[in-house]
Image 1 (cartoon, rainbow, N blue to C red):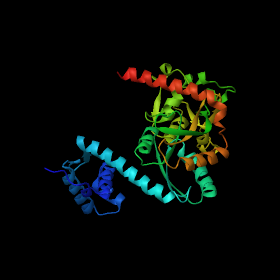
Image 2 (tube, rainbow, N blue to C red):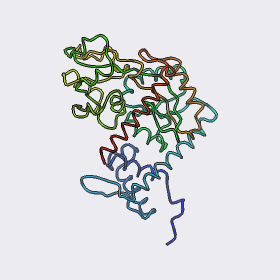
Image 3 (tube, one colour):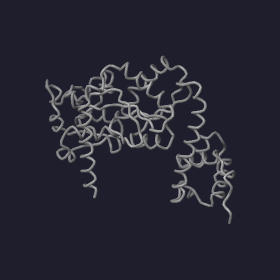
Length: 334
């Protein structure tokens, strides 16, 4: 049998299939694509016929990609990303710092930093349209590599083989506890005080979890740690007196004390914190625009953070500590 001609493939059909894989539901996929469910289902069936591969297992309860379907859908997602970049690059070549910028941001930073970013971009780059997405670091970097995002705001370190990272600022951590906790009354806190716990952490997948663990001896904490699915839930657990934690300074404002049920204390600001960077693909054709945006963000910092250059040594320390922690966790799983 002769292979189907390339003209039989439609980017729109690939887009429909990728939407189904993302939503795991034909109805929601059709809604996100702006078409009827019947039309989307028919086009996905035609695509499967052209490819000669069943992309999805369909039951009345769920829709899941097949094993072969996952491989093809990953390629389709990459192809769509390249097509979008082709259109965007052509559209923006004559007008830098304009058009759409798909920007991802980690969940522990987004609600507290993005209002500042949006205001700055409106003032400095009025022709730039931000399209925002919030998720965990791993998911954002995957979307970036697949071409579904143009840049991401994440905490260092990130893999450097295929990505470019422009540090923006160093964000200190603050210790958060209930006002009744004995640490709330102490004047000079050190990182060793975190071991007095119980230390509350974000669930696995959030970089803030690893960053918190890198500040102390994990072997003393794992047995007593409890986990939150979001920063807001972490705050509620602290207010309830379940334990202590570290909160990034932008998320530890006066309006986040839950009516005085949370006390924030300064830690050793030289070591306790994270460096936030703007990250993009090394092959990104808009690199000059992104560097200009990074420079603008770095030139006007929100209160509570400071120049990342002052903590260059810290980045190396945290990098090595996080790597050691991940190696330890990997050995434990085995």
